[in-house]
Amino acid sequence: MVHREKLKVSTPQGRFDEEAKKVSGRKICQVTADGKHLFYHWTRGELAHVHLGLYGKFRVHKNPAPEPRGAVRVRMIGRERSFDLNVPNRCELIDQQAYTQLRARLGEDPLHSGACADTVWDRCNKSRAPIGSLLLNQSVIAGVGNIYRTEVLFLARIHPELPANHLDRKQFDELWERTKTLMKIGVKYNQIITLGREQRDRPLSRLAASERVNIYKRDDCPRCGSGVKSWELGGRKMYACCNCQKK
Image (cartoon, rainbow, N blue to C red; front, side, top):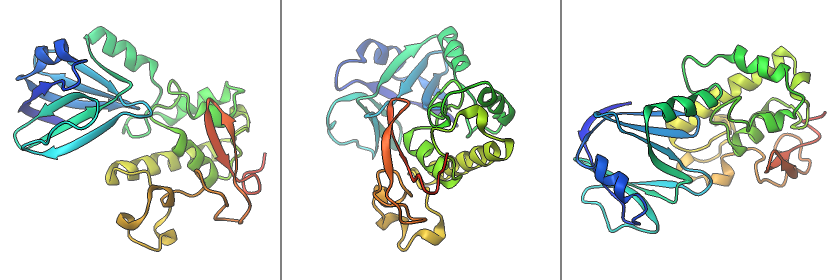
């Protein structure tokens, strides 16, 4: 994504004050994403790194922007629109070396056209970790979160606790392709949507977030009607149908 627009940068909360002064009024030339990390590139070489974490949120406004709502770490104002960034896990200015090092720690991003499935396959082959844990490892696959890992494993009928090195190539390829497809849908609609069109009885705009997924935080499996089991796996709560997703 490329921009050539001067942005006014402020920090209503006050926790980004020195950084905001360095970039406010300068042109932003590019915004890039790697996994869950966003990078804002200014024309003089400054780089802002943003990671939303569990609670961070962007709010986009038409100008003139309203009064800041909540703990707004950063507000950026352009010609026609502005946005507020609330309670991100990380928001900082970094140099080129830090940027290069951070990107080097990340695994393959399914949303990138040059992402290499073979690299991820090799990592799976060498790991005894449960595939449900490995999917959250950002050094293996960048960008997959708890909802996506739950949903792609359900759709591929793979038990989350299956050791990654027990996957065969056909299972892995299905996981990889489903992950790419669902994440691209998420980008298109700016929402996590894992239900197929044939499963939706109403327009997306009328579906609650909990109705756009198959089993994440659901009680019953839509495929077989069995109860959905939940437990901690990889530091996050996993959901699975142990009837459809056998070990």
